[in-house]
Length: 105
Picture 1 (spheres, rainbow, N blue to C red):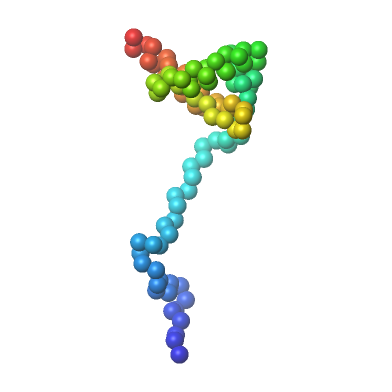
Picture 2 (cartoon, rainbow, N blue to C red):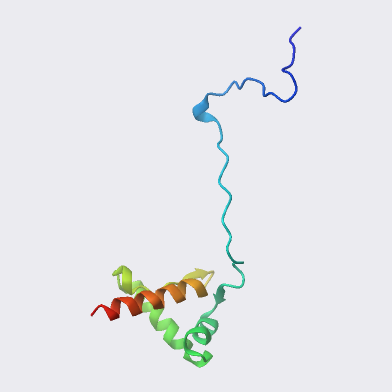
């Protein structure tokens, strides 16, 4: 008859240590994502230019980014389905980087 380990102690593992699953670090969430995402060229244009009528400029920025491989000149966006999306925080950072780069000239 085998005895069970005393309560509060773990039973010896039969799997090697290299196969043991490590606990993942918790994801740091500083702000809700839903409030940070702009969905569609209309919302991005409203955020950047103050009016939705400038959505064509967003399409142009996205198109130019697709053909330009220079990392500093890429318009930060992603797609959900066919819709262009962007994060407000990422756009603010991108604008700040543009300002810093142009101030050095």
